[in-house]
Image (cartoon, rainbow over all chains, first blue to last red; front, side, top):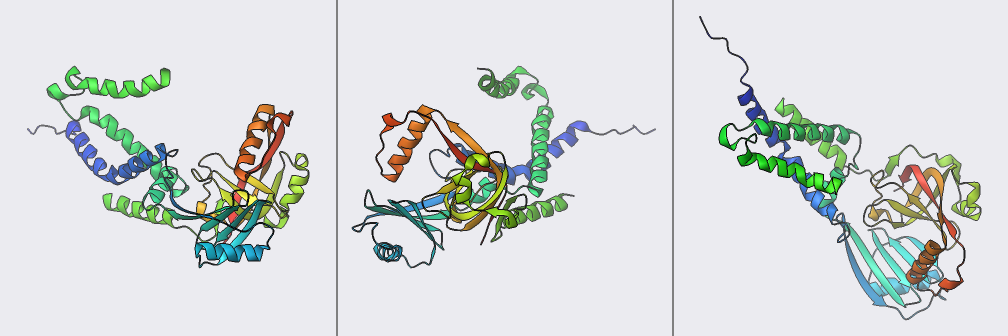
Length: 188
Length: 154
């Protein structure tokens, strides 16, 4: 008579935790890196590198737009087609270039600033995913990812038996601490 | 199974990173009913809480979150802000100078005297102008569009 073999839940849980953990590595890196980047949005621009060049100007807003443009292009040595121009006020003028640059002129301060914007490599794409700008299909995938993270956290409670089990205080205090930190922020 | 999931991940990643030359957000914009920004700003109260479509050159974009952009009016020295909740639409900074169409509801933001003074003071500082803050004794309103659809043209 053979012994009836059931599902080995402990082993299955460890294997699922391992494989799902491997699967989640990539996206966890994306969310962690962009999470840090976006947390510090007030200290830096996580999506773009903005390069600024400032120059003093010696002409006034009495000149025609064409002459103002020529003078500014010469001052900054810009060899890009102008996409659009805009007078924000009688004293503030802006030129937008094809390659993404913007030239702002302030005739009160007699100063011109050329800003060139380029996407910050890697971060722009990571942040886009993090903030769910891609929408549609990404919502489904990030929901799945969230579900997998839930599984990883719950299955972690059943990974280890014995004295290092999270069900014993020797390591269980870590679980309690991890739950207490957000609780403190919520309730205090 | 794992192989299929890998393929799904790769496809989703690629499709979400591809950015069309013409960028669209939200619902389809009805370009046929486009109104002039100058008309809207001439009597904004007539359009509050009404759905309108406007068009203009993008002359400013929120640097941090891409949560607003300013469209230049057809009249000099005017612009209109298109403002979304953070994350609903993210306008790229690189879109400055491009043409855009926006359909949405006109919103009025009422400022009290103190807020109006701060706003005017900030504006004057930014534009390098002088303003007598103490002479401001009443509040003002700002008008912006809360969009349901935006198209940034090539």
